[in-house]
Image 1 (tube, helix red, strand yellow):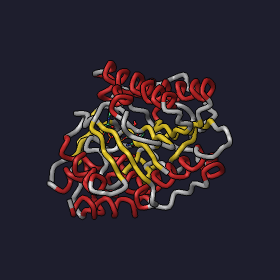
Image 2: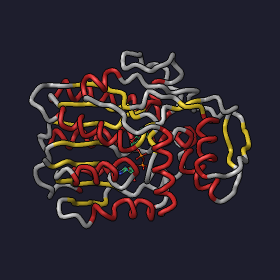
Image 3: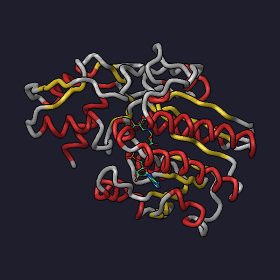
Length: 315
Ligand SMILES: NC(=O)c1ccc[n+]([C@@H]2O[C@H](COP(=O)([O-])OP(=O)(O)OC[C@H]3O[C@@H](n4cnc5c(N)ncnc54)[C@H](O)[C@@H]3O)[C@@H](O)[C@H]2O)c1
């Protein structure tokens, strides 16, 4: 099986690529080293991939995907992960999110049609739910996004639906809930806090610490994506949107206390007002993931933090 991963140099894309290569899959990846965070970090993520016999990396923008991958033969399935991520920067620069996440997704879908690829897994996000009642279920309406990032991901899901209808593309949209672990993006809270606490710097919390997130360890996410890949490859027509979370929301202040405990440091915390665009809580209902994907999160939060810190130290 040959899998195309868009955004392969990023946190989730590179972790998925390593997992797929271990499973004996062939992997081809595209990434433009978007400047959201340093290229050096992404090159490091790619280290094991670029030297692997079953992997090929192409540095290019998904906006040019057809041209960039013209010589790549026989792709069985696409995992479309490339995107401008991050809620707050999407408020500052919505155009960039529309370009990369909406037009970029359009180009990936057109590529699938041109190349007669019939199977795609799309990286969606818990952000699409906005501030709704908890836990978030896939049956909820998606009519109240509170950031440009969220509306680009809702758009992506709608585009997938249209191409499923028009071209019988098999689609699973996976709604990831705050993914953490080795290689996590440097802008995301846990990674940023571990760096600051290790260097004895104070950390800044937005809000009073009672907001919560359904933190999900990268290894659980990657296993869920792998199940989705196998499902979209089956002959049976499928279009589904599925939550991938841990169903275990943790308050921001409790997350931070866990980090201080695990790093054996004295807390130094500054509080600032909540930022607009951030949802108050995320909490996944994962009944559908369990039923359709056989998904079961395996890594507890304290175990995930311990593994993350061990990785951080070795880096
Ligand atoms: N990390 C999370 O907690 C989380 C939660 C929900 C959804 N997601 C989604 O999962 C995906 C991956 O997130 P991540 O945390 O790994 O982010 P990331 O920024 O580490 O990875 C995204 C990768 O896509 C690449 N990219 C961006 N625009 C591109 C373009 N136009 N052409 C080619 N490559 C491009 C970037 O260079 C980067 O390497 C994103 O779609 C994100 O929206 C992530």
